[in-house]
Image (cartoon, rainbow, N blue to C red):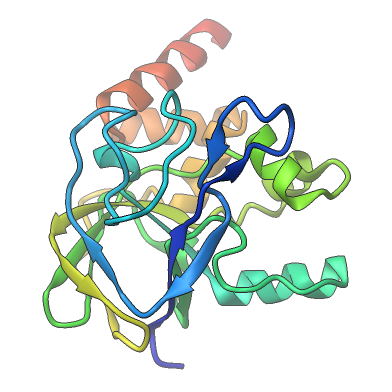
Length: 219
């Protein structure tokens, strides 16, 4: 199957589903194209996608979480399991992909999208209460974590325009073997995975230090 972008999606503000304390951008809808660029380095610095709403400024936005990608194949699996429709963008992804095993990509690996944009695999998604409320499914955070297919956040290395149908080219791997599935397992509490990630020193400083403290505390 061709590796490509199936859908480009932008968040529309809606009330946070649990307590309505802020307006979340998890409800993403397809648009004809998106413009991506690198936001500032920190949470609260906005999305890397022009016009994409970020509601939870404490945990979202910034360079490490500039763009979020999730595979259509995984949405299809959840559709079959949950017996309900899950349109492109429903998991809060800016890019719905086809033909790419996103969780097999290595942390810091680059991908070229279309002719100009270059994105870099960054950090795993952490499923949260907002995601659970948006889904409305029992024990959703646990179920999503156990599946292990988290998609990936991406940094913007070369900005530009992304549209449905753009090809995805996976570029040269970095000099370690930590893939996104391992990084997600580490974030979700797997100490063996966490040790692998810490030893590789492949995550941004804040994420690396958090895992290193946790692993150190349990030795």
